Amino acid sequence: MAYYYDEPSRTFNEYLLVPGHTPATCIPASVSLKTPLVKYRKGQEECPLTLNIPMVSAIMAAVSDDNMAVALATEGGLSFIYGNQTIEQEAAMVARVKNYKAGFVESDANLSPEMTLNQVVELKEATGHSTMPVTDDGSAHGKLLGVVTERDYRLSRMTGEEKVAEFMTPLEKLVTASADTSLKEANDIIWDHKLNSLPLVDAEGKLTYMVFRKDYDNHKSNPNEMLDGHKRYMVGAGINSRDYAERVPALVEAGADVLCIDSSEGYSDWQKMTIEWVREHYGDSVKIGAGNVVDGEGFRFLAEAGADFVKIGIGGGSICITRETKGIGRGQATATIEVAKARDEYFKETGIYVPICSDGGIVYDHHISLALAMGADFVMLGRYFARFDESPSAKVMVNGTYMKEYWGEGSARARNWGRYDLGGKKSLSFEEGVDSYVPYAGPLKDSIAVTLLKIKSTMCNCGALTIPEFQDKAKLTVISSTSIVEGGAHDVLLKDKAPYASNM
Ligand code: RVP
Image (cartoon, rainbow, N blue to C red):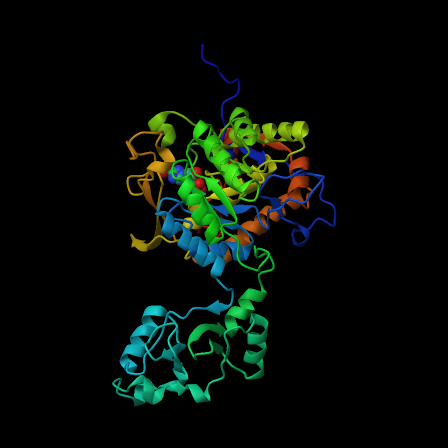
């Protein structure tokens, strides 16, 4: 006879935190959101990989490319580059993150000396950049001949047909620095010479990077940056349980800091075999997460298989219709609570702490706080990150409002058979995801700051300065459907929706 659970499976929206005592020392500025990403012997050693904020971006083509990875690592989180692309393409994205030098910009608005002022204006409009290096072949790494900024031309007094060579600031009048200049040195030169930008050139006079005054200021104001031992941004990458023998070496070679098997259902021999292959070839030096599971049994299976972290969630993603198409899944809150219990039991038995990640179904910022309180070490979000400038998807106008496109990996658009197929014909037999729009939300930096502040405030209301303390002290209550209504604005006529009322 089938097994029946005693309790219904619940979502985050059905829970609230009951505040605890807040000591005077407990203020958001003092809260640390550091959290372990991979397994370790808690209490006996340091976790080898720690997130500075408990947020990672989903392994999805509409969410996590190299651009998003740099933006999120800057804020202290981590992206998992999507795996539903060729091995070469994915490895190239990882390599671009690892080679990205914060503050060093590969110019995307470049001129050749023969171009005209009209073309300069066009390029400025297309890229939004007003400082343009002039190189012999008009490329980002050609021989540097000069620079054009808005101070070099006056549209009202020129015809537009003038050649760049006639009005650029030529090389001999520019301050430049050698290619091996550090960011700190570049900044000193910028300040000493009152510059807005500094071109770096190699021994042959070829342009390598531009350093801009404003970027250095940005770089300085990111104390949470996720950097590796060589001060490079950290990045994760998704893999599947099919082509791992080719994909893993390419990603490791490209510099991926952590991998994650991306599957809608992870309690399977395929995942075990993938982890075993990684252990056999790389020992513990390659970190690999697995999932997704929704109960303690699934967690234990993957922990025993050697997973470095375990991801939770089936069917809760905003674009996911797995529950409708296959009738499998579990409310995200219940799944998180149960897996957290299994994680703690496993720790008691073995001394090994395997971090868990609640993946999907985060609609409001406070859902992140709830997931953490329920025991998640970090959360994975797709919809949340898809809304920002930095996500790879298109920004489109729909009925007068800007939207970003967001589609599931199980949608016909993504055709990510590696994530859904259970063996056989290497194709998507039916859809488990939809194609959608999400409201455009500007730059990641602005929204994530508000989200993190909300989490820290909630933690302070519960008297906690760290995530483990929060998990220890949190008191959670299931709420009735009428109290959900009471929790929003009610019985008033809303004048306007408050900004940041939710992240929808
Ligand atoms: P959300 O943040 O609610 O948008 O959910 C993102 C998660 O949804 C992903 O991390 C993944 O686990 C899941 N997903 C991705 N594609 C699909 C699908 O097509 N069903 N589901």
